[in-house]
Length: 364
Image (tube, rainbow, N blue to C red):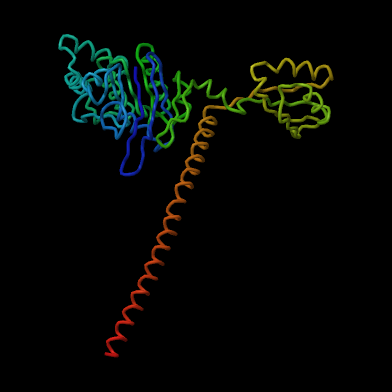
């Protein structure tokens, strides 16, 4: 549905988007994830045709956004972070105006407007001025405007920013409903939001794509993605001896829990053995030695932990690259210093020659 090839946006030496490549398949909800300033909004503005790219191509449903912008934009409904609304219009007037801009046929216009007002739950405020609406309702009007005409691609930039918890849940439900018949791209830096509604996650940092997968796979691919936490009544030595017989357990840590004779045990799941369920093996191993397990808990890496690890790796790589780039000016400075010294020597030689000529004239 969308293909982004070698996309670059350069703001006077600052790369907001750095040779970005990805594809969006039809019929899924995509989470566009990244820290503030990562290039999410810039990328979305280029995809929707709001701004041009320095380099690269964007294809929307087979149409190049630069070469065939009108056809490409017909395939997109876009909700910017700040919805573009005329506050002196009523909700109905705003949607009627948007329908005119989108060239929705007059015979279908009223029906289309009623559909999106129902979807965004705006029927009760259709006659109210937008200036008198809360931020949550204004966001709904922006969403209804983006969905109007039901284009195949819906792009939402930070759709829940500034909303209260009840409004966030309502917007999320609306996004899920849209995902049944549309391709939805949801930009956010709120990880729980992406994890709750998205089928696929694209993580970008400093304008570069650093991960692309489902939330579940991203969590599973972490090196230390899962582990176990147990409370066991027994001696540390005996607990360690039992766990040493289980190939799934690695990096075992045993500490006092605060309860008498009870130890808190944590260990990382061996990556080669993660697919097997270790809980049954643990139960029987400790039952054979008559050591009671008081609690057992499987811990897995959250999307937050995945995000922090990936962006930290990207930052480290970026720092290394900058260190490498900084070496060249120092070398150049040394060369310039050598050139200056040479020029100084030349000047001294010319001075000596001038003095010699002066001595000759004095003798004459």
